[in-house]
Amino acid sequence: MEKRRINALDSITVFGLIVTITFIFYGYKSGLFVSAEALQGFLGRFGILADIMFILIQAVQVIIPVIPGALGCLAGVVIFGAVKGFLYNYIGICLGSIIAFLLSRRYGMSFVEKVTKPKLMQKYGSWLNSDKFDKWFAIAIFLPVAPDDFLCYLAGITKISVRKFITIILTGKPFAIAAYSLGLNLIFTRFIETVIPMMK
Image (tube, rainbow, N blue to C red):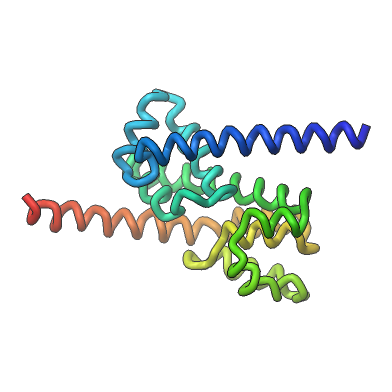
């Protein structure tokens, strides 16, 4: 029974990866990931489901970080407005972070090494032997410049409990997401107001 359950999990994981890779290929070919306008046009096809689709996109970009996180956060605010954009960014990124953690805990170190960059493991790998990992992790998640996606994978192969991990993610992510979402939106708005008119 246990073996069947494990095989089912493996099959679901493989299917999810295939769907994700297919979507990534489509997004790359269509220019979906290079501009907020392209992403907005894509989401517009889904009508009332656009909100859910965006949240899922944000979750995927954490699990397989090919979409720049900053672009996703900016797109959320540009497309949905400051409040809804922040909320959707928060839900999607937290969901993706939790899934990354659970995948790492399920498949272990070899999996983490396959889906992350070696230089990140070289830089943060020493955290695995620290009895203060949860404290360093909480600080890193709070800051908007830390490699959050990798650290979520790294957390999965430590002794940190699922409950503590989720608590840190849910309480630490809002500041970083707000900094990305609102800060980049301010820069983007100023760019549109000043640079674009000069180019005409």
